[in-house]
Length: 344
Image (cartoon, rainbow, N blue to C red; front, side, top):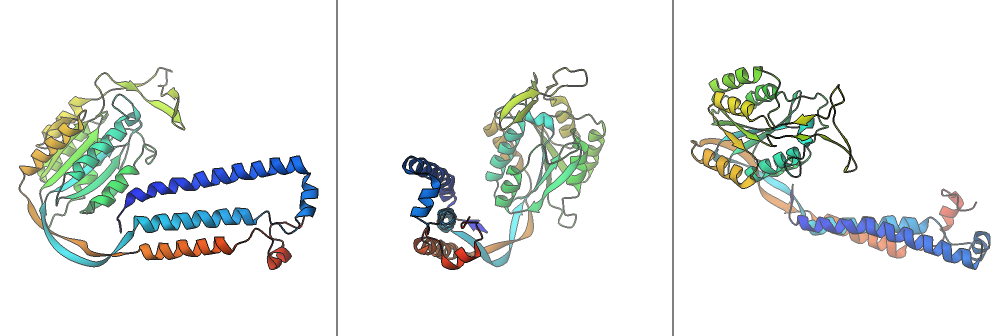
């Protein structure tokens, strides 16, 4: 599926505004009515007025607005799948999602910086295939090897430090999992890019990196954070409540461990890149990939897409018609059912 005009999604912000305005108007009406007479007298003066219908009209109006907004975005569905030949490299991104990646010594924090770096690298790729791994104390496959960059960026944005319960920074687990991503039959050039603060407490990582190198996998590491380090904030609703402490009650300071990342890259014929400057990282990765031989492989992709806006347009018009003919008076059959206790 493709979304042609994503910018129109901003119009959906009008829905909560409509709801807030509705609540304000209803409170104002109630206040004005109380000045005129009590609710019992008002009920006698307008016995056929429904208390539920205004809410129903609001819901229908919001559905209409949402449907028309999606129609303007114009979602498209692929209708013709073709096999195409591409030349490129198989790249797996292993993103550290341990709690130390919440440190804010690099803006906005280490994890968000890592996601920005991967997004910008992907934006500069042409026909390479990519996969994504998330890891902390364990490694988890986030996205298998694919040419669908849009899906990759969507999965990437959903990554957070709560997605893996096992904490730590087991780089060796990420490398082991990455080794299963590549297709042995196609023998494409293989690249593993690890984005981390390097706080790895396992000596096994170097041995696993060496084994990966023997399988033709080149490992490049990108360090995010500062050597000076920073505390790990504990937040609620975006507000810092405290900082992570150790068993002795001291504030934990997490530091970028460049030595670990350099050693891993060295063991697998790669190199270490400091992730402080996004443009420098993107340029470095681009130069690395350009120097590699491109292998030809087959990939399936949609060649034709069909507009789907008309369905949402029709749905939006349908809801608008309902809103027009939906009066704020009690409906006879609905009144008899008394589903909303309006006769009480």
